[in-house]
Length: 444
Image (cartoon, one colour):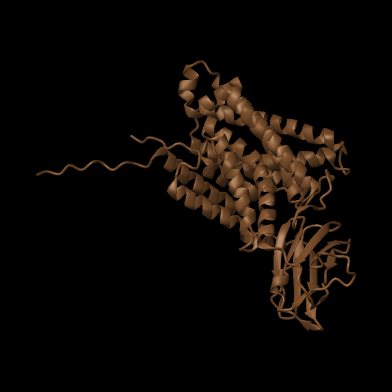
């Protein structure tokens, strides 16, 4: 009896694209020098420091979190009770939070005035000298503890805010991929472009336009940037028949070129947008609080995403976009102007990336030449988790990534909070390789 052996199957196009995407992500991470906030901060010129002592004796192993321009950092006191972090900006306010759970039993942060409900949280403004000293009064007393449920709900609110902002960027990448099969790594710089243009238009040091004019103008200019990139670069490359891998490599080069162009014009420091709304927290219920700026950010992102979903679902252009994402050849054969639809997709993607850049500048807070690169991996994770090429999948994936990123900081250091979301991405793809809302491709 003769056995017949079927020839082995080659890798599917989806797996091949996923492999190239993963390799490119790792390459860009290495080139861009993506680092944790703590390691990146060591090169910053200014310091926030302090001592933690009890009756003159140093307390070792006490955890503190420092939040401000450049992101959140975590530090632990040394054998002498001292701690220090490096920060990028002076003249800004930094919030230092001491974790009372790491103090000895029966010891707490004491409020000598009797007017502060959270004495373990101190805000201080960095002076022109570039050094900020923050110390706490430590003694016997009851700790100001926050229940786990309250912390969890607070993190979920923060995660939704972060996820909605990520969704604005992720939907644009997903639209471009769905219609052109391009994994656009330069989309991170489109996010940065929105923040930089907003600063150029609204900052008192530049044009000083009112925010109600500057921010819509930024979104319009970002849409124009998307159109210009398509007309000047991507459409000519598509007409030449350039392969998707080559296009992806071009996008990496464009990303690096744009990033260092931003650095040339704005430098390596952190810039601040004018205040759009107060950042002081307003209590909602229990220990859960949210600032007016966070409310505005969430509401604005939600309105834009709902409007986008309505456009994509019910408008003729939206239906044409979905048709091209499903089958570009069939869509073209039915009379759809593929080039025109792709042009509109680039305009929409640019506008939404610009808005994401504005909201991210307020979320960080601050503007840096490489700020878009810091969330690029999370944006790609959201797109992949939701399903490559599906705009609704990008939205769902972004919300999941945003919430998991914030919730994970309840158990792991803030410097590693992105890891939790990426681990969940891997686990989901092991079970459902096409993503949550993606469709399984037929092979053969």
